[in-house]
Length: 184
Image 1 (tube, helix red, strand yellow):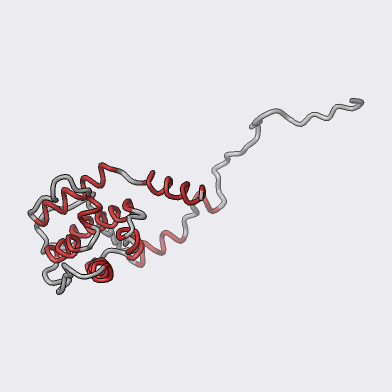
Image 2 (cartoon, one colour; image 1 turned 90 degrees about the vertical axis):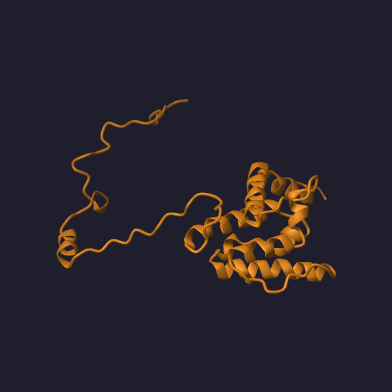
C-alpha cells in the first residue's frame, strides 16, 4: 500500500495550483461564465460538459451532443468526445490526458496540461479571436538554399569533423596523478 501512496504523492506533487487557476480563468473567459463559487476546479470540469462547451466555443458544433444527465458512462463519453474534438483541432496525442485522469481525479496536472495545449493551439487558428492560454508557439523557419550555396558548404570542414585548429589537451591534469609506491 505504501507504493501506491508514494505514486499518488508524486503525481500530486506535479500539480501547480497557479496553472490550475490560470486554466480555470481561461475557460471562464472563453465561456463567458464563472465556475460556481466554492466548487473545486476539477469537480466542475469532471463530467466533461464544461470541456465540451469549451471546444464548441472554439469550433462550433465540434461536439454536437453533450450529455447533461445519465450515468457515469454518459459523462465519460463527454470526456472522450472532448478528447476527439481537440485532437481534430490540432492538439497532439501526447498532450491529451487519459479519461480516468479526470474522471477518477488521478492526474489533474495532466488535465491542466491538456487545457494549456488546447490554449496554445488557439494561436494557430486565425479564426479564433478570443483569449489564448500559454505562450505562443514558434513558427516554422523554413530556409531555402540555392545549388551554389549547397555546393559551397560541401567544401567547408566544420570543427566537429576532426579539425580542432591546433588545440590539444597537453598540459591538462585533472585530479591527482597515479602513484605507484613500492614496498608498502
